[in-house]
Length: 379
Ligand SMILES: *Cc1c(COP(=O)(O)O)cnc(C)c1O
Image 1 (cartoon, protein in one colour):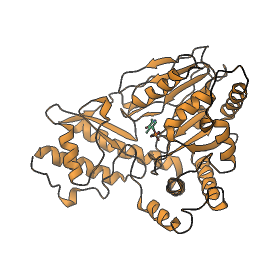
Image 2 (tube, rainbow, N blue to C red):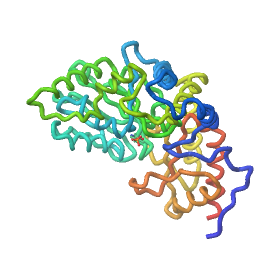
Image 3 (tube, rainbow, N blue to C red):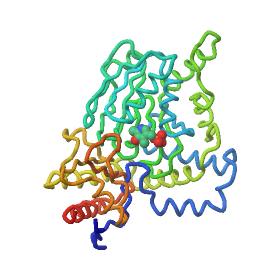
């Protein structure tokens, strides 16, 4: 197939539309360059790096308007590590998990693999929908994802009625939602994410906004695990107790990637300067609407998520007609510098997926839709 050359004037200013890793702004890279001669290559146990971590924790506390008794905790390993941290430290015996895509299923798989936990109660939804667990008196932790990145579905963050009264925790995977989708973190006990999505940093870290109930649960579970007759194993690396005590000192248990911290600190500061979560969620809503409205008007593609209320405003998925191959579209776009708009491979649909995180300019999203039209007309 001959290569399609998209005219310069149609191209977006920035061609990165990944669902994570996502676009990193130039100012973040400049912050990294500036830190190159001073921070990089220095100890994370000394004031300059601890101040950086402190600024991230404080910036996120402001950004999410966290209740006074909540804490921002962080550690190495990304959101994937937090699935196992939740199993080891937060779930006492029985979790209920909503599963409706690859990421929410992985949380359920972690719970299933923990020999000291009961098999979870799984509430499964079809891809393209969400399913929040129902109340069950056996359950001590309710888990679901605010944004199922594999399908572009957004789910509410609202406690399951009766769960808090029953002493159960609400544990939300907010990886591709945090920073982009509105949230009241008081509706969760652990609201956790990685920084390479809406926060436009690199991977490698997990961040969790924890309630007093989550901190208390972790202390209780850790104390119980130290008893001789306990069968629970809390690998030291996955100890939430250690992460909490290190975070309070603006440190991580083991050596963090300073590049990730610098990129993240710059992004949190930028987001707060722009107007915080209200600003970023409005910007993401605008960008997402551009794609959904374009797809609805298009004669060759449609939004994958049929319920408008379940459509993500950070990761947008659109199905293509059968006579157009998604890989033809994505390779033509990539040849023109527009990258990472491929669907989630394991979902196996003829689909495009667009990350419209706060760093992405809505004008670039408009340009993207024009470029897709241009390519499809010429395939
Ligand atoms: C990306 C993603 C993860 C995994 O994040 P890592 O940093 O790669 O561990 C988990 N959950 C959701 C919803 C995600 O989008």
